[in-house]
Amino acid sequence: MMKTLPLLCLFSASPSFADANFIGIDYLHSDIEISDETANTGMASFRLGTSIYKQIAIETQYIVGTQTDNIYNMEFNLENSKAIFVSLQSEDMNGFSLDVSLGYASSEMTVTGPENAYNGSDEYNGFAWGVALYQEIPSYKNAKIRLGYQSLYSDSDLSITGISLGFNYHF
Amino acid sequence: MMNMKGFMPKFTLSVCFATSMVILGCDSDNNAEALAKAVELESQRAKGTIIESVTIIGATTRLKVGETHQLIASGIDTNNDQRDVTNELEWSSSDENVATVNSKGLVTAVANSTEQQGKVIITGTTINGIFTKAEMSVSDETITSLVLRQSNPVTGDINTCIDANIVADVSYADDYTSLNVTKDISFSVDENSTATIETGGILHTSHAEIENTIVTGKVNNISNKLTVTANPINLETIDVVVDEKELNIITLNVGDRIKVQSQANLVSTVSATPINIDNNISWQAKNDTLAGITLNGTTKGSLLALKPGVTEIYATCGGVQGSATLEVKGDATLDTLMINQGEETITFKAKESIEITLTAQFEETTADINVTEFSELSFSDNELITSELVSIGTNTANYKVTSTSSATGEVILTVSYDGKSSVVKLIIE
Image (cartoon, rainbow over all chains, first blue to last red; front, side, top):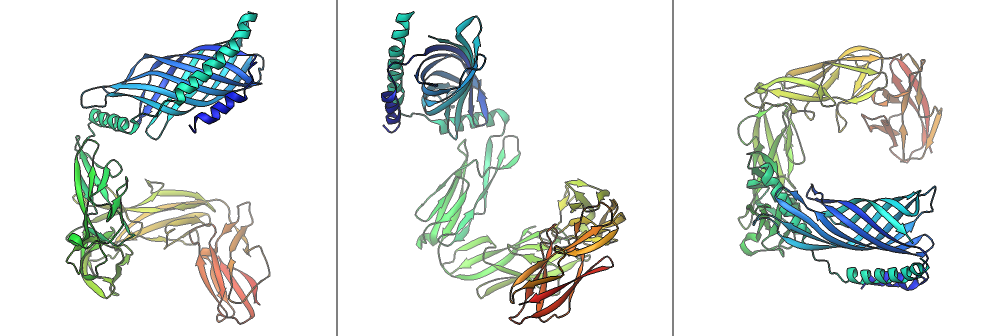
C-alpha cells in the first residue's frame, strides 16, 4: 500500500487531456548478474505512454523473453517483466532528446538446471529506473529511434539490467 | 487521426492505471540469495574450487560478556589448493543466548554461562554442505594459571629476524582451558636480551649470535615464563626493497622521500619465499648527510634524500647485511635554515606546547625540505621546557616543545643542521 499511494496520487493529479501519446517497441539485451557471473538473455519490449504534464510522462512497459542464456549448466530465462515509469523528458534539440525514468518493475525469471542445482521460477519486484536517448527520424517526424538502459531489479545478490534499441511513435 | 488523438490519452492512462495496479499488487517472491548460492556452487564445481575440507582457526577460546573473537576458516578445494573461506561459510551458534556469530565468523559473547563450562559450539558450513565445528566458551571465571608457548614456529628455535608468535594456554577456576590467548596478557622479555616483544606476543629478534630470551607473560598476579632461542643460522641474505622490488641501486632527487623495506632469504629448506623483516631490521646510511632514514616507529625505513652524492644504504639483522647504492641527484647548496615561518620570537603560555619545524632552504631552485628529524636541538634553559620529536618519517616532522611548569621566562632555542644553525627566542608567558 505504501508503494501504491504515491502513484495513485500521481494519477489523480494528472490531467485527463494529455496531449502526447506514444507507443514503442525495442529489442532488449538483458544483463543478469549474480555471484560474479552473468547471463544475457534477449527480450522484446513493448511500451505505451502518455504525457501528463509538460515534459513528464507516464509509461508502461511489457517485456517478453525471446532468448535464454546459461551460467554453467543453469539456464536463465527472463520470461517477462511488467513495469510502470514516470519519465522526465528533455526538450528536443535538433531532433535529439533524452529522458530519465523512475518506476517500479515486476520481473519473472525461471532458472532450470540439474536436479541438485537451483530450479524454480521467481518474481523480482522493486524499484526500476532507466535512461534513454531519442533521435527523430527526419522522414517521419512522429517516429524516433530510441537507445536505452534500464535497471529492472537490484539487490545485494542479483541485478537485472538491460540495454535496449528500438522505436517510439508519437501520436 | 483526430479520433485517434482523442482516444489515445484516455486509453493510455487506462492502461497505465491497470498496469500499475497489476504490478503493485505483486508480492515480492524471490529466492535471490538461494539462487546466488546455487550459481556460486556451480561456479566452484566448474572451476574445481569447491571446498572439500575446512578447518576453523581460533577455536577453544573463552570470552567475557561483550567481548568479540574472530574465527578464521581455512579450506582445501578440489584442486588441493588452500584458501581462506571465512567469508564463504554460513556461520551458526548452538546457543545464541550465550554467543552469537555473524556472517564473517566474528563471535560475540552475549551472556555468561556456568553450564558445561559456558561452552557454545560455532558451526561453519560451506556452500556445498561441508561443515566443521569450533568450541567457544563464555564465562567470567577467574584465571588460575597460564602456560606460555611458541605459536609460530610451534617448536624448536625461532629464526632470528623473523617475527615469532608467543601465546598462552590459560586455565580457569572451572578447569576450562582457553588456547592461544594473547588478549589481556602483558608480555615482556628479560633485560639481557636484545629481543623485543609487542602487544599480542609478537617477538622481534635481530641478534647476530644464537640468543636465548626469557619471555614473561602476566595477567593479574599470575605469570609464566618461556625461554625462546633465536638462531640466525638459516638467514642467508637480506634484500633492500622499494615498491615491492628488490633494488641494488636507488636513484632519487634531493627532497624525495621513499619507503625502504627489507626481506630475508632463508635457506631453501626452511622457506622458499623471502620474508618481510621490517620490524626487525636496522637501517643505516653510510653517509647520513646525503640521506636520512627513520630508524624506529611506524614510519621506520622512511628515507629522505638530503644532498646530492652517492652512498650506501645498509639493512642489518642477525649478523647479515643487505645493501643498496643510493644516488641522490640535484643541486642543494644550503642557504638558510628557517624555524617555522622565520619568526625571531615565539610566544606561548606556560604548560602549553608549540611545534618547531626546521626547513632547509637552498641557493638553487630545489624546493625547501623539512629537515627537523635530522637536526639537533638545544635550549638555553632545560628546566623550563622539554622537547619531543613527533611525526618522524614524514614531511610534517616537528619538535613538540612543551613548557614543563607554570614558570614564565625566556629560552633561546638553537637548531643545527649540516653545519648551520638557526636561533629563535621562546617567550613563555
